[in-house]
Length: 260
Image (cartoon, rainbow, N blue to C red; front, side, top):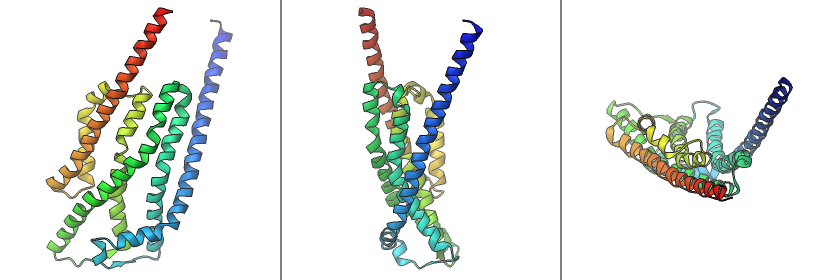
């Protein structure tokens, strides 16, 4: 290959890289636009969501206070963010699929596209688990400590909902793990062999996250860490299913190639 050919090939590779960066930027702009629209919708439906949560235990027996003029606005923004996440997550998966679509075969394109609606289902499942299981445990533990210390309980609306959403959002996002791993397996970035080798590190990270978002007692930690570990194992299992199908398609393709 001559120096001229090398320079031409280098320019073509550079142009391809810039095209990919431009495409990625365009997809990110779409996501930001949908996120902003989702937050606008979230602000519109924040009132019924707030009224529903305020009617549930334990907050229905509490008097929440505003300690700052910005507390009410901050509460609305927290609700808007959670509602926007519910709307934007499937769109993020779709944009990721659209970005890598040219590199996928026709069968892989259709298979990967099926992950999009499950992004919403998994997020809502994580939201329900964190709200009905983890949050009550964390609230009971923290208020129990305050009462044991004979502290007068006076809670602000911002502090209460910040405490709630700091638990709900991370756990809900972690419930996307099986979909993310299956998607990366489809792209041949991950495979079950690599995931099994990473098992100890993954367990450590998931247990550490479970300890962070729960009260410091073994039962609460276990009730959160065990489902997260099970999620990882389900992810490995699903990755194995995808990987076996990929190997089978590769084998058939090689047989067809040898027959021609």
